[in-house]
Length: 456
Ligand SMILES: [Mg+2]
Image 1 (cartoon, rainbow, N blue to C red):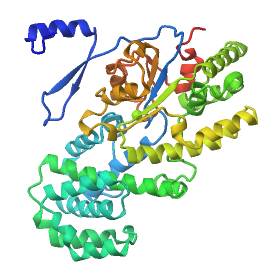
Image 2: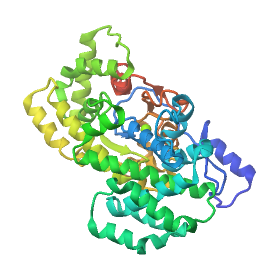
Image 3: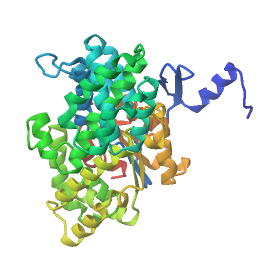
Image 4: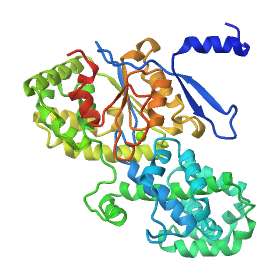
């Protein structure tokens, strides 16, 4: 095959790659303006075997999306000084959510900075940025974030902060910075405010990203310390709202695919029907309960003999995914107690759930790629398939789960036609044209209604 061809030959080649293409727009600083991805044909045909399942994290495996949305809204509040719902009602569920879920953080932030630009106030932008940068450097735990903050400080002509006496004092004291937030912002505003260059939109986006991550990582640190309940009260005024919890049916799916349920899978049919209700808000129409149990049992027996590989594929960075999935597995372990299976199986599964690496054969995060190649680009899913060692000829035996538009495009663009959309409250308004099936009943629905694509 020739390496350089004219556009007519290029069009010929493209034509043979697929009947359907995704157009994925690039940021302004990338050549060319957009990428064209040939999509794998949608697949819903019956399976004889399943090699692997690839699953998104936020919104598909867990409910973390609430935290991301909170942190994005908090970012605009800090940069505008409008910290109460009286001064600004906050992000718009219908208009904003489709643009701030499922894509890369940069894209989410770019959208919000463009949309809410008129609310932003210079002093608030700078004051909140100083605190966010200093918190990340002194209290953050993610070394990659620290590097990015230092690059940003250099670009904004603010690296002098690092040599400032107050910064050095804070660094030496190792105290909690939260109580000093106002003092830190005011001090650095007075001394370093005039060093900022003129701020263009790209600068504002970088500043906003640092503010967003500071908030998100501060909350993650507290969750890791076991403070989930306090945070739920502070942020959502609801002590019972768990910030990070698995989506309904996730425990069942992971255990089923790994072959840990075997002939006891059928015992969980009722639980799955309940989970369907929780996920969709609708009752599952049960025509023949005995038939459902029979099918689930046969899935359990199949995977006991042929365990499937599982990958998590997320546009979150590793630091976040590691804490989030760690917390998800804590909750899964408590859910295990309520399952109607034998104590021997529970013990086996409990051991497996003690580390997420026992469950996930690949754990792919934004840290495995770069910010500009995240979903809807196919890269993260391609890396997952490669790490799972699934050959291209076998992609037809892979299932992909996503809750967002860009995620479903990324799955199909990576060559997986068996793409299942599992929208949840925050992504139900997304366009799911890329999905082979849309299950508002989530994982329980793909098992109960589609038998996981296996022949009945
Ligand atoms: Mg998602």
